[in-house]
Image (cartoon, helix red, strand yellow):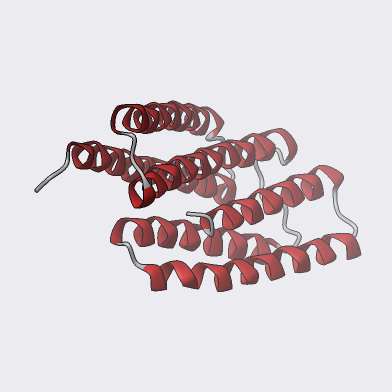
Length: 196
């Protein structure tokens, strides 16, 4: 027998999955803009704002379910988890916008050659993690989710190696600032994938 709460949980689930797709899309646009040296700031900002609105809708739906049905135990944990996941997806959008804006303001939209391979490696790893986190959520794949912790450690290693490379070499200040900030945003996105 189906409970009234189940319909609301299904709606909430669909909302979170859709938000994950939008978050992955905005990160892809931001990452491609960064790698190709294109200004995608406005597009990324607009999609980031959509993610903010989606978070508010998910929170409203979650609170409505709590007030209306007073869920307990596993149902309440699911609702709470979805609210936290929505926040993480919102952060993806914010970091995507930060990457685009930082690149626009500091790098003159050209790639700063210093350790570019490390930056591309970071982007690739983080994009893979975002995709895995969303798939693990949709498929309820615990084993796939567990692989994120190892990949996140790899991202941290690349990040700290990149910082050492920046510190050891003379480079143009704006370029170094841009790449350092972008690398940090990528590292933070990787952290958030482990929370989903």
